[in-house]
Amino acid sequence: MKVLDLLCSADHRFEGWFASEDDFQDQLERGLVQCPMCGSASVRKGLSAPRLNLKSSTASETAPRGEAASAAHADSGQRGTVAAQVAAPSQLPAELQEAWLRVARHVIANTENVGDRFASEARRMHYGDAPERGIRGQATAQETAELMEEGIEVMPFVLPDSLKETLQ
Image (cartoon, rainbow, N blue to C red):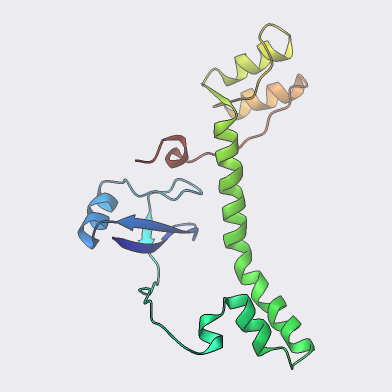
């Protein structure tokens, strides 16, 4: 199994698992590799290193990263806090992407896909002609503006095709 760090044209970072390098190239050429954030099929490999499981006897190498960092800066007082503050922004994009994916999966699991009937179904629910429930679908910008003018709350939310289908 080959695990690759991948990036899309918008620099969203994600991981892909492939049987081999040839399998990755084949799927890439067929447009099967898509960014889970934006759905872009323009994907490239990022820098990645193989994971090596080597045994070590030193505390700093065997301790989890947080414990090793705390131990290294235990005597330095304020320097440990500064190091943690500097490291945090680099984690922010990955954490935001993870949060967005959780929200997207929640939306998919808890709403009904009404497709291009979204505007008409939202109106039917608003005026009491259909039972209220969570729905999702497609609407044009004009349809969305008209719904909002009628007092119907809508929220544009882009869902990549890769999230709409079950992974095998």
